[in-house]
Image (cartoon, rainbow, N blue to C red; front, side, top):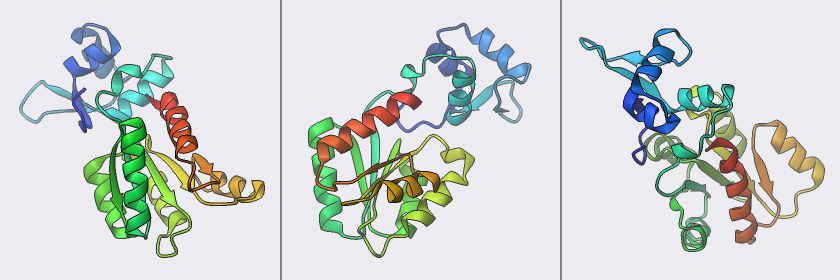
Length: 192
């Protein structure tokens, strides 16, 4: 799969699922795999999030979906701490990392960059972490994005409340880059 690609051909899906393109066409035609046809053509297109759903339903391994670097978006109102964390993630784990410092930028960059993981710093006062999480969870096209809340000294009840709001994980030490990398790897192993 090409990096950043969010719509696949039947040939792409066939390679990922290790089946013949004709098999993918049958899945599409009988409604098991949802997508759309190119107007004026018989060509089919399948959104990546639909393929992920299909593969999970059929207990198929999704490791072939992730090609290239894992994409992480760091959301932090303080550009210096965002840049520092981005450098650390890129250096330690080889992730492709972008940073944003406002809620508005987050929405725009998520659509363009299509991150696998969003790391939201709860310590940044100018960021509406709960609002960002709610917006992403409300959008079907962004369903595979994993969201990690980053803070210091969260209690168990505070962490639990964040998980109930839609965050996938909480890191209770904003300086623990190794712990963050382990959590990102754990979360993305489930998806991809």
